[in-house]
Image 1 (cartoon, one colour):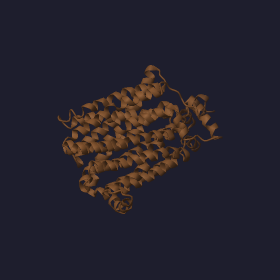
Image 2 (cartoon, helix red, strand yellow):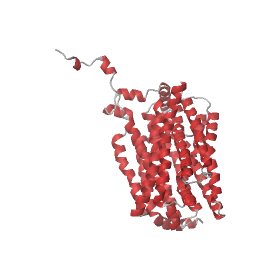
Image 3 (cartoon, helix red, strand yellow):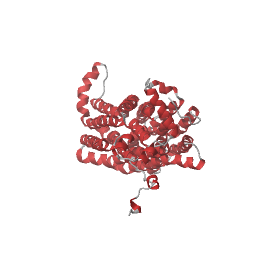
Image 4 (cartoon, one colour):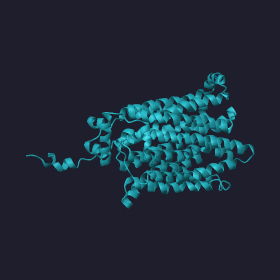
Length: 472
């Protein structure tokens, strides 16, 4: 007699529980982004000590940070295309190896500077040896780190349907905030016990550990379906966007003939919407990431391990903003029954209002340093909420095959903004600091940080007033 529990009915097949392997992939992206931001922030946390040790001016430090941003800007233009060509898995591996090496060689900055200084002097370039050495290390770090976000956003497009992308992007992008939180909690202590040189080495070596997990766990949904890591239900869920399936079919047809040209992507207003959004807002994040420790030293004399608590508060708030910003479009979509792009733009309009509180950061600085810390924390939280949605506008409208390329173009625009902001900040702080009024320099920078998002939203809305997916 057959037992009913052993009979596989059609209903039982229909009700097979979907696997959730895509969230393991999201976790890998989260940890990569965390490592990314810890590596890039070590310098800013050690800046007060290094500036005193090597006798740097604000402009010297601005040159070092601008080198990273400039190299990041140029490299990310090609990183997206490179990753689109060789695939996400290999692209991420190459990027992380390079940026981990760049992070480690900061420890050799003085030696590198001594080697490069005579070469540069031939071309009439004369700089302090330490500045040259750190600029070279930032160059290598910037080229490597340029691969992180194009690869991560492409991975998200490959592994998540549109309705889950802003949340998954918000989750992995919160790794930037965790990295910015972990760095002030760990870097001053490591530096105190092991010295600044070993701090760069220890932190930089963590990336090589991540590579082991990436190599073991990551592959395309199709390959992992074949290996039994995910089931058909999850595979169908990942590819559930009907309009995207049509767009992907168009791309496959085009692959039989001409390849998609990089510059041809710039003819679309949707691409320029993303580029403008990045250019007008990324500089704000770079400013706070690289100059907030300097602000605490200039205003309150806070250095070393004393920075741990205020910086931790800022980046804890920022982490909440990243995840909350990823959730907000789904709320507006469900409430107003809007398409996901319209819901995302509504969410971004709301988010753009929050940085206005940074206008009051300097006004309240005389009360307690906690007042500007809290207000700046709101501003940085809004940036990450904004960023989680801005990244996803690309995969909303473009086929997966070109997502990394467009992310690279926009991120390059953001890197250019970072260069301009860093150089402007360095010049302002040197100029007003010499006359004893450095607060005027910070006032100018805080005004820009406050209004950038509203300006960016208006420009994006003008460029793309309504949702329109691209068929290449």
